[in-house]
Image 1: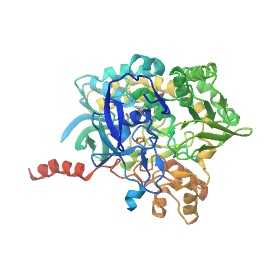
Image 2 (image 1 turned 30 degrees about the vertical axis):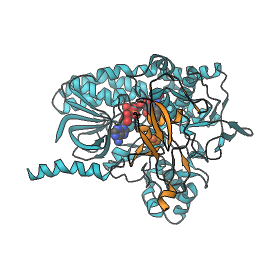
Image 3 (image 1 turned 180 degrees about the vertical axis):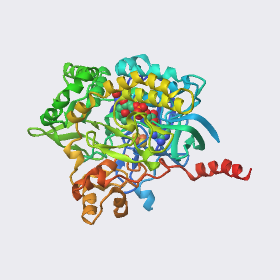
Image 4 (image 1 turned 180 degrees about the horizontal axis):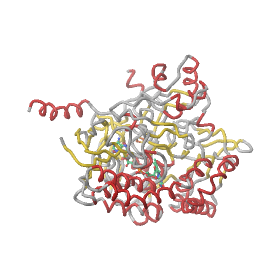
Length: 101
Length: 464
Ligand SMILES: Cc1cc2nc3c(=O)[nH]c(=O)nc-3n(C[C@H](O)[C@H](O)[C@H](O)COP(=O)(O)OP(=O)(O)OC[C@H]3O[C@@H](n4cnc5c(N)ncnc54)[C@H](O)[C@@H]3O)c2cc1C
Ligand code: FES
């Protein structure tokens, strides 16, 4: 559990696996919702918008807003529709800089 | 191709109830949902939830277990994790599971895709740390995760429900900042008779408010000019009541009620009408849920907001109707079985006009200030939309020719109603005349790989 996270985990004892997000390793509950687990681990920014590069994070948690987009194995996916598995490597989705550059 | 008697899109209360009713009449059913488990939004992950979390969520939530149990029969084939991205008028549905596309056809098709939360476009609503109140509920239901320092802003019964659940979780909201006014309450009073008929719903709401009060959660009502403040993330919510106020926080939870998710019905070109009481579009349908396309039904909040119990009853009616249409029930028998369901549905809906009038969308979210972003995906502002109107833009589809509103991945789910409302106001037209985005498949982005993979069996079918 991350005390600096804006989110509290009610069941902190769940078995953990290692997930790499944007180059940092996190111990996240196995099988958990990836967006929820990253938020609880203290990740505040998930992506930058393609238009202005503004930071975004999960907004709807139900697969409708696309603000939780991340890249896994080169495929852009919704973190709120993805499960935590051991060894998952997650990158920030390309934002404005990547698009322009 | 894969075929079943009744194909159901959405495993919320409406879809689950329809499945159970149809299966008990002998129909084969397939139940598609992009979530891994049945439950829909209200009963999200109810089959898995640990005891302590269930106690926080309360009996209205755990009541969903009964529905989830009723669909574990061999006649119902659940297809979980299935994102539906195309529907055809001949009731063929294309979906993907784990990046693998497939098709299935129903002799009858029920669209029970539920609701979305109404967009609440206020300054700063795109900042990390701003979520919908429903998103916070999903975090709690599915993951046991709750925000520590949150302000809940907006209006409607779900504001009180999530607030009460957060109190029970030991992380009470810092405050409720409510947009409804005394005037709204007065306007709702003529509907009080209906509300008393639907007294159970009202009593629940009053119970949640009492829980919040006991926990000492401050309530600010009649709040105007809400704005999320912060550098790169939400750090405070400011608003005006008698004076300007500011509450420091890490999370802002926005909610102004729910509206039908019409992406699937729109993509079929079905007619929709503006519901002035609920400030949203609903797909046209008859009392059994049948739409303008034969054999395609709608039920639940996707057909018009009525809440979970109404969704369940409407789902059962579709189940009966489909069974009769496919020869499993005589029409007279269907009608007899439906009598108590229609009566219960009327009771369940009785409190709605009161709630709709008492908790309307705020003036601010119906007509946001020029600088406010309305289209989150493409970062189009309310001022942009007004400028399009001055240049002769009459409807949301035309707006796409002027700018990119509604063209991002969410396909207008969180801007469509705002764009309709701004254009209607600017042009002095009704929302009905102004219309909505035309929705085209894919309803959700699909990769070329998925499309290519699906083409193979089709080609084989053709050459066979
Ligand atoms: C976030 C949220 C939280 C809510 N929480 C509550 C609550 O706690 N209490 C309450 O009384 N009401 C709640 N509601 C209101 C809710 O709309 C109803 O009470 C109830 O869930 C409606 O049931 P339904 O069967 O019509 O739809 P839902 O329960 O919404 O079920 C619809 C299902 O369709 C699926 N679906 C939609 N589109 C697709 C697609 N393209 N492909 C595959 N599957 C799809 C969804 O995953 C979902 O499971 C909530 C609404 C929202 C949006
Ligand atoms: S948080 Fe909205 S799509 Fe994932």
